Length: 289
Image (tube, rainbow, N blue to C red; front, side, top):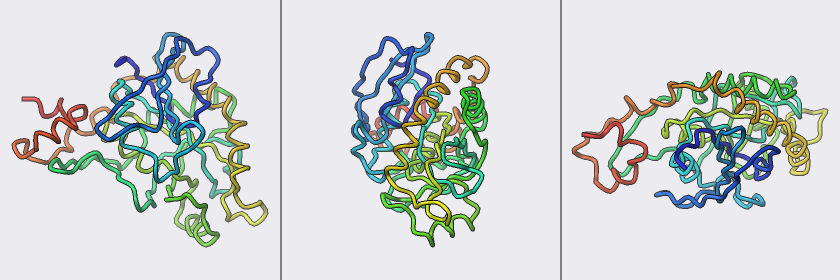
């Protein structure tokens, strides 16, 4: 299965995509526990694609309980080099209306209780995340959404909050004053772990509401979020198809694929054997004798 280069992480219905063939289910074990669910693998025009429901089928995992490390490690173990994260988000800007798609280029981590690295326990790495999303891959995702007929905004800062509650009005207004554009609950630490796994990562953020800052709109509700996401599922599927069809125009060796090249700082003689084995998938190419 190690020939699967494109991964999709998002809602559990994304893999019910017309034209997907040779569908199979993969139970992937990782040193970081089990991923959110089994991974669905299928072929579209000869390209193998891996789909992972972030919150589990039936949405059973809260944002703070998603096994982010296991999810990214599992996709990496399948060979994924390009990962599209399909996410719901609230809008903090008038121009980003419900139903629109945002492909953010910056990320602000406002979570409190999540592990955002694979490293530790004797092996230290400092990965660069000045640009937390792959610029080239994000551009390809934006183009695919536009070609699928979506209203897309290329660029914007995505703030991740801890959840599972929605924001207070005071918080929402503060995030706007900070210069944030959209708000969600899952992009951190997903983006940072994807960087450590040397996977080019882009977010297809579906605007479901105006959060709670907009005085002329109803405050965000679960019902509103689900309604917009269901309406946009077909758009996301069409964008994924176009992305696959156009792969030869955007795929290649990207900076994200070498994120650990200068990031490992621990003297290799000091790395415990156990942690070396645990992280071998990520670091062996840099630590090989």
